[in-house]
Each structure stands twice: as C-alpha cells, then as structure tokens.
Image (cartoon, rainbow, N blue to C red; front, top):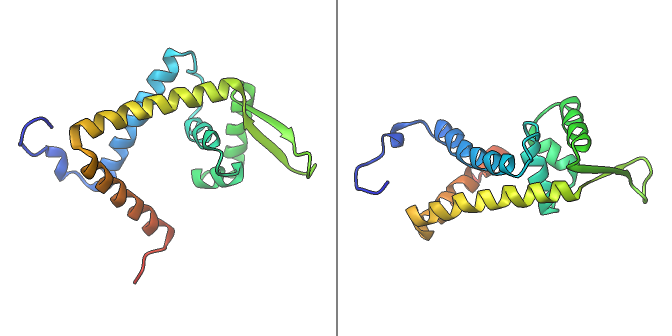
Length: 153
C-alpha cells in the first residue's frame, strides 16, 4: 500500500491470503501465456511445465506434489503431450520407464510463465523492499516445513 493505512486484508485468515496471493501469480501467468498463444494449458499444467523447466525433480515427484490421483496426473500429462508442451519417450536405460521432457513449445511457455512471475516479484520488491520480501519467503518456507512434518520440538 502506498500510505500508512493498514490494509483490511491484514484481518483475513492466512490460508485465504495465500490463496489470493497465489491467484495474483496465476492470473499474471495465464494472461501472459494467452497473449503468446499458450491458452490451452490445463489446470495444474503451469505447475508441471514450470517444475520441468527447473529440471531438478523427476516427473513422479512433481506429480506427487500436485496431490492428485494417478489417473488425473496421467490425464494431465496426456493433455500436455497432445497439446505439444511435453514429449514422452521410452527411457533408453530402462525400457519400462517413460521420460517426459519439455518440447520447444513447452520451454517457450515456461519462459513466458517465468517472465510473468518475475514481473510480479519485481513489483513486490518495489512495494515492500528486499528485507520484507525475504522475511515473507522465510515464513512461507517454514509453513512448507510444517506441512512436511519437519518441525523441531
């Protein structure tokens, strides 16, 4: 906020704030993707594409983090393959496994998604400053740890 008046949002329950904050990012990403012709990414597809672009987690872990059924996850991957965002190949080392990677279209969508996220991050830094954004990140990271059951007694 630009003045010293406290936001009425400070009285909203934290889970609701998190949901609305997530929407800010999601809406910015969806708008940017639609402007570039990537308006056919299904729900949860942004998460899969973004996570695969980071290249740090296998698809099985990404799907687990979505907390959806195996059937729903399979349908999501199928849709992303059919729409040209993912490529699915038999693993050369283990023919029982499939390897899923981003296609050129998928990487372009990931880059668009990242740019939209970075624009929101930049605006947040201007409004709040480095220290306050870092503190918010620390709080959110701790909430994640609580959810993982890794809280120290």
